[in-house]
Length: 63
Image (cartoon, rainbow, N blue to C red):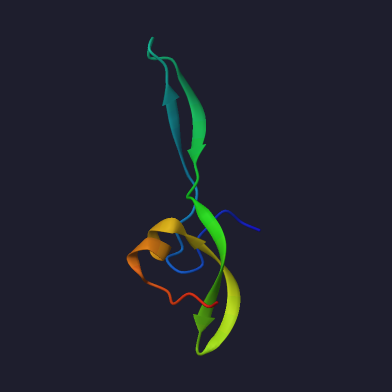
C-alpha cells in the first residue's frame, strides 16, 4: 500500500529537516491517509483517502 491518496493523488514530499544550528538532513512528509469505504459509481470500494478529502466531502462514504 503506497502512502498516497487515490482521490487527489496527494503523495509523500521530501525536503530538509533543519535543526536549530541550521544543519540539514533529508526527511519526508507523508499525507494522513486512511483506508475508507467509498461509493465509486454506486458500488462500495475500499480506497486510500487522505483526511483532507474526507473532511471536505470530495467522496461519499459507504456504511
